[in-house]
Amino acid sequence: MLHRKLRLIGYLRTGGSPVSVREQRNMIREYCLMNEHHLIGFTEVDSDRPSFGLQEALNGLKKNDGIIATALDQFVCHPSDRLTDLRPLVERLFHSGKVLITLSDGVETVTPAGQLSLIEMINEWSGHEAISPITRGQAESTIAHNY
Image (cartoon, rainbow, N blue to C red):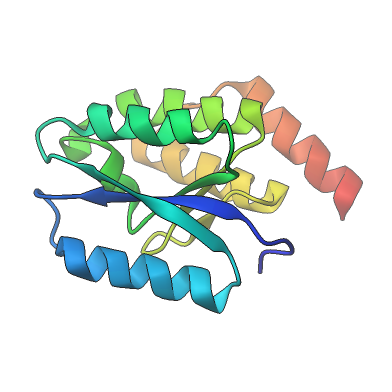
């Protein structure tokens, strides 16, 4: 469970998702309401060009705490691109102290344990070391100090 209220940007896919945009909005709104987070707004992404909406969301992080989406696959065109596209995104968020929440995957990177869980998920997809040992070491070190 998250311990602080966050200012979040909703990230939606307008196509290429099994979940309609309306359902995505409702799921994200409900999560933010239940967890007392402030939903700043949404950025919508065309199914063939997810990087355009992602850049808008990343620019919004200057004044906000994180991004929320219904699934990690929302950030890539094809599931086979998960490692190539997600690794830089995850590392950028970790290094800037920003949060990533995905509802269907159960990702909540607000805690070191949540960060480590995401790292392990990406490593599982790749079958090998997908994120640098330094990033993993930082998460493990923070967990050891906080718990």
